[in-house]
Amino acid sequence: MRHGGLKGLLKSVRLKPILGKAVALVLVGVIIFPIWIGGYAIAIYLPALFFGFTTFPTSVNGYSMLPTISDAEMIETYSFNRVLAIFKKPQRGDLVVFKSGKTIENGQLVNYLKRIIAVSGDEILIENGFVFVNGQALDEPYTMKPRSTFGGTFLEECKTLKVPEGYVFVLGDNRKRSEDSRSIGLIALDEINYILPFGKQDKYKDRWRDTSRDKELVNLPSFDFNIYYEQLNKVRQEKGFNPLKKNEKLEEAAKKRAKAIIEFNELNVEPVKSKYPFEKALREVGYFNIVTGEIVGVGYFEEEELINYWLEFETKETILNRDYQETGIAAVVGKINGCETQVIVQEFGGYVPPNYKRADIEGWKNNLSRLKEVQPSWARLKEYKEFYEKNKQDVDRINEIISTRIANISTIVAKMEANQWLSATEQKMIDQDKLLYDEQEAIATRLNSR
Image (cartoon, rainbow, N blue to C red):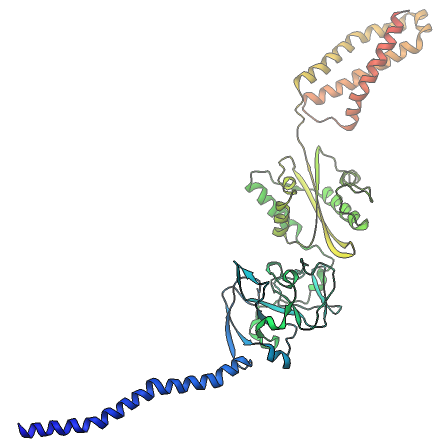
């Protein structure tokens, strides 16, 4: 027992320095080493991040940067601040992440990711769907679609803006789905937090477009007419309306109207300057129908965009009118108010049966019957030589009137009973019949008194 007790005592004595070393190792491994590593990170990594030597992951929300960056995609950006701006200013083509009083969503400031298009000293112009910087049209393979850039509330179409010192002009790559400098204005350099220089965007270039044929689109319509007709008819049928048939004469009339609008710089509903309403254009191309209409728009639209545009305004009543059966559209590029743009005109035509009242038809038929009854009596006056010689002019005239009225009313009754619209000539027959009736009655009164 004593021997065992002595060994136990010796063991306890030896454990003390071992435990001390273990505790020291724990302190070093758990506390001191992490602090040392953390200090190293603070001393090395944070300055590297601050001065833009290392990247920072940035999450993208939304579709404004397609095709370059997709929704929910993470990209690696570099820190940017006032200090860095002194040594290296952002360049055209760089992607920047910024936050300002203009980037508010749901009452909170949020980061926007956009592309720099113009820098301090540059003059920028948006016209005809293209961007011009310092007078040169930009080659923009990163945009979602060609000729898709249009003005906004801050930078209107065909208005030149010079970017002041300390600012940049930014746009989203998906121009038709982006809120950017066109509406929120210029971005100050000190509002930029992160940047991805254009030279470091190689990994995204396989997503970009071939722009070799973009300039060929300058004077061409921005949409395919046949696709437009198909999509328009799909919308009409979904809403319970008949599809429209394409009519070449209506297309020709639409083109004439678009050219007149551009030539006379006149977008008014009533063409005061040109005196060339759509009804005149329809007559010139030889198109006639019972119901006709026209809608006019300005801008560069794709097929679905144009249909949605019509549906947002009073033009909705026209494209969804059940009385139309035919249509024709045209798009002509020209200058309106000195600005190159596209004028779109669409003509409509349709047939609606007149559905005459039965009482009106019976009234005309009764007139016709009475005229046929009295016609022989007035014709026999020519057999009374002496009377006829004395009243030849009146006798001939009343017989002429009766024959004319019988022919006219027969035509009118036939059209009415067939439920067909009267032509302009036949409508004149109705207007003329009242005058002929009055003249007939006056002559009859004179002849009966002799």
